[in-house]
Every structure is written in C-alpha cells, then in structure tokens.
Image (tube, rainbow, N blue to C red; front, side, top):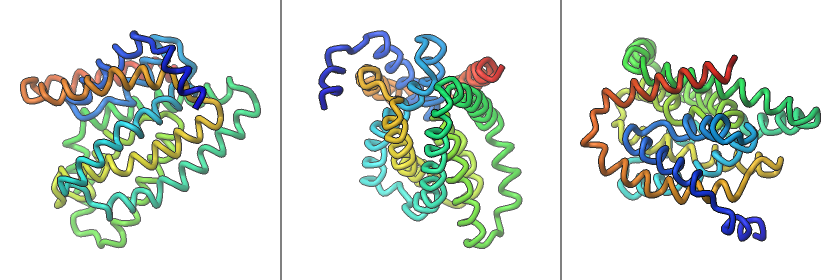
Length: 267
C-alpha cells in the first residue's frame, strides 16, 4: 500500500501521454496494447525489459477486466472457449514464471536478454498475424471445418499454453495472435463472442503473469498509474473515432511498425 501511495506522487506526464497514444490506437484497431506499450517503454524511455513487461501485464489485466465486464453484460462472451484457453495458459504461465525466477538467479542480464529476444519474436509474429490474417484464416479453416469438438478443444488448450509462455515473457500476443487463431478455429462463432472470450481469457493470464513479475521485483507502480491515467481516456477517444478512420490504412501501418521494432529488438 505504501508503494501505491508513493506512486501517486511520482506520476510522469510523458508516460501518461504514451498511454493516451497507445490507448487511442487500441481503440482504433483493437490491437497494439502490449505490442506497442512494452517496446515504447524499452526503446524510448529506457525502462528495463523485465520491468516494462511486468508493468504492462498488470496494466493489461486492469484494462481488460473492464472490457470483460462489458462483454459479459452484452452477452458477447463464450465462457467455454475462455475456459479452454485458460486450461492451457494458466499452468504454462506458472511454469514460465518459475523458469524466469530461476533464470534471475544468474543475474538480471540473463532474464532481460531472454525477454528482449522473446519480445522481438512476439512483435514480428504479431505483425504477421495482422498483415496476413485473411490468408492464415483460410489456411487453418481448411483443416478445422470438419474437426470434432474434442480435437478443437485440444487445439484451443494448446493455443492457450503457447500464449501463456509468450505473454508471460513478452506481454505480447494475447490479442492479435490469439484472435487470429480463434477466428480460424471457431469460424462459425460470431466474431464479437470470440473477441469477448479472448479479452476474458487475457485477464487471468495477464494478472497471474503480472503478479509473478511483481513478486520478482518487475513492476513499477508509478509507471503503471501514469500509463492508466493516459490510456483510459485514450481508449475512449480511439473507440469514438474508430468509425471515421479507414481501418485498411491503420492496420498495415501498425503491422509495419511492429515488424520493424521486433526486428530491432531481435538483432
């Protein structure tokens, strides 16, 4: 509690401005939260990768809790899909956190190096999922249209496990990557329900991962509050203007930026 109170006195307006920018972009496109926030913190503000990831994870847990509530109230949430994802992601997240904790015994450089490399990989994978989403959907759908529910369940759990590892290390992937695969696996489910299910699944995933990073000393509370102060109105503004901005211009631009940033972090 003392750390939280101290954080109120150290809010940084530059972080809040970044939070507003990223929040507005998420409102425009529906993706880009962790994909942009973490690299901005690392590359522009010089925040340690482990701290940037840990803070962003709790930031995502808080913001997506509100989204989950709204989707639940609107009936656009399939708890069956959310549970399947969580069956894979929760144990994978815990295992990944234990590995990061063990790696931390060898010094912060080892953990930060892994996080930076994973972040670069996740950003490039996110960019691919945005740019080639239509092709990916068609390709996967060819193999899943007549699949039994048991096989579908197994693939969903596997997706959850993959996201658990990737998000716990990089804070990136739950949105763009997860949604792309879900759209292919559950092509007959309304998109709004898939979006709601993906957001609901991200809450326990990012919360558990965020708490794990916090216990390892990887959360900056002042930074978290500064980001939230900017992102909450940013998301509102972006969502309001979304219908007035051509999506077919924004998504390729976002994907290109993510690919370049991911390449820079991977080298």
